Length: 305
Image (cartoon, rainbow, N blue to C red; front, side, top):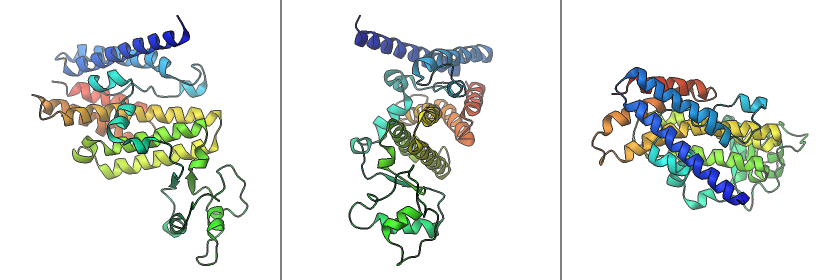
């Protein structure tokens, strides 16, 4: 076999394992015997964490970063029809809710620190809406900028100097021109897709403003980590993607049930279980997503019909 054929075979087997894990989780959620349901759920989590986690992991398996990372698939019961085919709930949500132009490289991408006080944010706001490429003269994240932190005086501080004094209050696309940056962009796209999903936007299952705020903070943290670059940054971003995938699995299950509620003969119980899993994850989100996963699985099992 050629290397390409081997990779294709591994991918095919991986999809099969995902279908098996998803099937075990679905069987656990529907099983009338609580003891048997817990056994099925435990088997699914072992398959997801010990097998699929190793196949998906980009970090070295015995590295400290790898050992401390929560597994992607260790979550509330997944939607088999969605996750099994794509291998990633996050990718499925991005495909569903982000148009093509938002998945392409954005050379004008800029994100401002969501915790920046208004008095400082408004200076960046004026720069951003100036003529031309507003951030083309901005220093990159790792530049040394002696004037960073100095006060900005409206009408007296040039736009270029505003960017220097407010350095580290924003991240631009040039800061993300790296492998770490591409990982951070995936985090951003995933956060947007989760927030735009129909279950979150139209279902009123969770506090949308609270979730939006948490996703905004996660995006900023990912961009800052990526802008710093390096091997440690890559490990952190992989962890963030895994944490986000945990939430995406639960959201996709809820979103799938919500979108099919008119054709599903018994949508109520399925939606209720999925909504409970999302609520638990959001309540603990982030950074200890692995604890929320355990609680979500426990509560999903306790509400199984």
